Amino acid sequence: MAKKKQQRTTNEFELPKDKAATLADQLGGDVLAKLKVAKQEMVADEKAKEEERLAKAAFERKQREKNMSFEELLNQYGDKGSKF
Image (tube, rainbow, N blue to C red; front, side, top):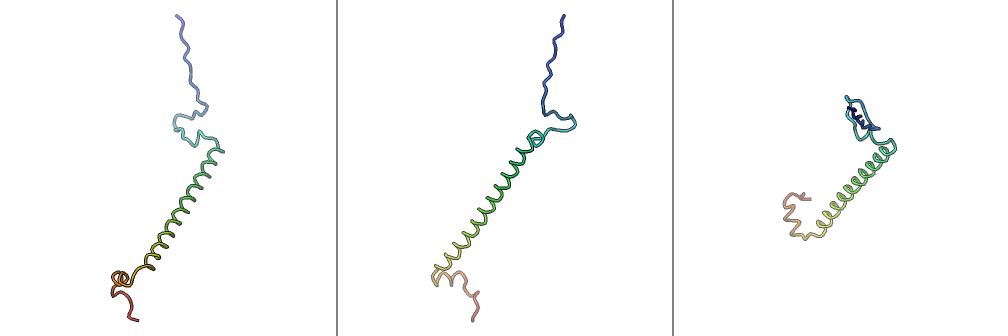
């Protein structure tokens, strides 16, 4: 009887069995660098959007207070103001 040869599956990214393969190990250095740059850009965009949202909220709050009537201001602040 002839023995069948076992086909070995080879992976070009094979690591020793004591280390688990990570995505960073499998990606090339240039791809990983591009991903890191893209992540930094996304973080900067999110930070800019958050700052813009906070500035817009502060502006709207000031506009609401500016447009309040005397009665609304008196109800909101009451006796908290100074006498002078």
